[in-house]
Image (cartoon, rainbow, N blue to C red; front, side, top):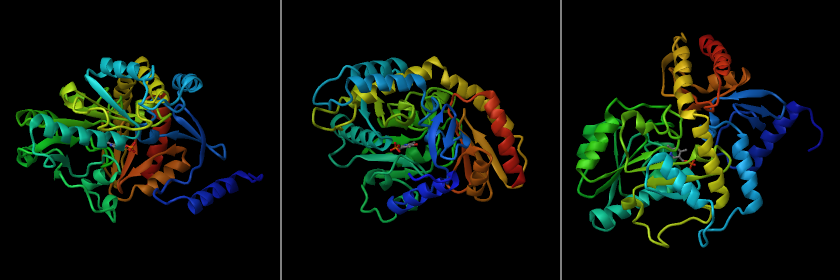
Length: 404
Ligand SMILES: *Cc1c(COP(=O)(O)O)cnc(C)c1O
């Protein structure tokens, strides 16, 4: 790069990105070059408190030293074996996931969407081979306003028109019910239903918490009808809501869960489906796979990321500091404010008007947030945030919200 003053450098990066890259995102115009903990630094040297945490992939904080160390150590040894051979990290990740979560087995993938696809395949195959649903007839029930990723099959059951526009033909076999409606779930089930796939709290929809008792009732309905209850915990899981997993708030036990994002603390894409032997046992050699899934670098990173979650008690921190933050945010007063809600350090500020201008204004104050759909500001900092940093953030959020 030629020597440019910093402002111009920011513009140059943005122009290069816009010129040579597909425009499938509309990012805030901040060009980040490094990060540590809850803070990110742009190319002009300005620092910002990260209140998005990469959609909860960096629950452990940016560039956590212990995860970094595990990644470097492993990168020196071996990074990729493919599953054609075994490696000495994958069995340990399996065991540690089992010990931490109680699920019998895991199947590792890379991105969240791949793990959702894996869960869909597992549910369908279980439906056919174990439940006895005729081949190619299995149905999966999902909820309106869901977000489970971006593959063709996954957008086939999205209710967001933009996610689908122009991408058909779509994958059949999905039924959509209103989120939080147990009666609708009961009605939608047929003898061909193999699974109910649900976010315990809907993230991308705007941190939508279902009515109390819904998840419990839904698991009971699923059990009565021999339907798998699959929780997508990719964003809600691994401490974000103040417990290890969001489903735990209702004391239930899903048949399968999907994890990703913070499973790597943001270093590397690592995802997995966790389930019983009965469910994951349907896969035989050659049925499903991924070149990078379960690679030793990913496993070493995930093992360290899980250790950090436990050692630093991040779910407990999230519960305590989330309550603290939420109580403060509930004191905000503005005619534009519709609702403040949340669980753990996963908080939605819902407005009557567009959220984007507020996010732009927060950026000027040194806080990075992203609007979720049109009217929600999502506050989801790394779970390592301190009380003092919350106080600091709150004063700035108050200034921006109350100014309107
Ligand atoms: C982010 C997310 C996904 C998709 O994960 P990717 O890694 O982006 O493919 C799926 N489900 C939920 C609930 C998510 O938040």
